[in-house]
Image (cartoon, rainbow, N blue to C red; front, side, top):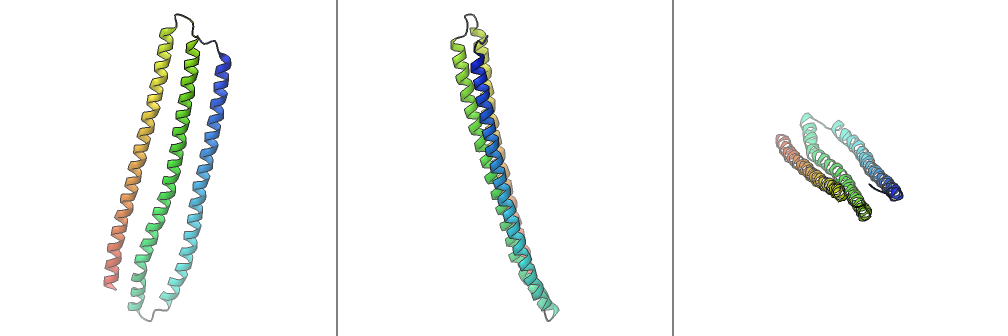
Length: 189
């Protein structure tokens, strides 16, 4: 049906080059996200170590059980706030990486769709007589595949938004509970 093997060969090579470029870009973005996460973890570990040392010194210097419990209760609020901040930063890193992956995938899908449609149009212009039905069926298949990719992209975006909303809701709930627990611990001290 198609008499243009060179066009298909060039299109295949261009497609492989584009996929390699996308893979390289995604790999780079994944490493950037991991680098940010490692940096955050190192910073958090250093800060936790320093704060734990200071807190231990303060607790060891307590003169009586009342002072010990007061110092312990005073640590609850800052500790909860730091945990929430850490969780938000991790969520921000993950969301940023996910957005980069989605953007790159959308660009690649759109570009591949344009290339395929262009190739199909060029090939079908020179199709032999009597192949109109086969060409129309082929074009319909391409259009259906494109519509499927678009729907998949839309669904993936919606799922990502739901996940982000749920993470934010969980962080907010944790924050509220932490504030209540801290308030109770402070009131008892």
